[in-house]
Length: 316
Image 1 (spheres, helix red, strand yellow):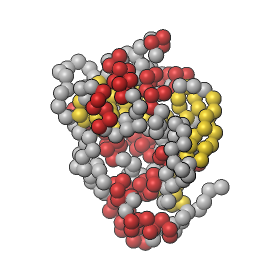
Image 2 (tube, helix red, strand yellow):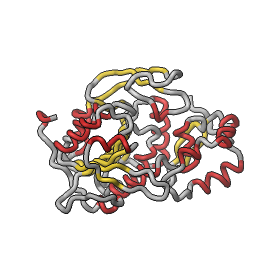
Image 3 (tube, one colour):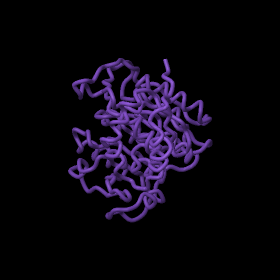
């Protein structure tokens, strides 16, 4: 049952602080601000749901006590480094996959960029979050966004998803990671069957945030034709060498996403040993041109992106 949005946080939060934070211009610092002690005191006053408005106006019902919901309420977007990078790389008319969509915020923001001629597919297995995404879909009137209420892996069936109270963003198929985590069984779909019919010959990009099971997705994803770019978490990788091998086999180029407060830069990686230095990586398929050997801005990469030709299924 839906909880009615609360009148809290209080007047100062709703009318003064939140509008200011929605104009926060920097690419770093929001995660620390969302856990600031003063804001934590406000959690006790606001136990029920509140409405977060993304920077493009899409309303999403969130729990202020949930870290990921609180970030959306305060700032109107999740990690700005990732969002700004994806907005720079996406183009009108293409397909965007938000894999591990959480509240769907990244997909809703990218939907403005790909437009009604494109498509946004949100993959999220947490039932409670899916209900919130459906509400936001109805309120936003974006028919080119589609929600898939399932996990996306390399198999079909049902699996245990471990959720942690107060932090929907760390739900994982990789087993129990926190003392207070609890398991729910959710459907999972094989991406090799699920994604090709959704692409329909168009170019595509993706964001992958699957908390420790990235390598159950990335080998098949990076072999699919039409890929221009893919941004993935890299801090949970057990074998960076395997990711490096898959990237090279498919003719892609790997960049680390820098964590600067003012602006993110893309750092070309020379080998697998450099991958663990970054929380997120960009995998790009570049057209002809000189090798990129120095840090660059996202717009410089965007001008070089071309759809990949893919590899035969037998090579996956």
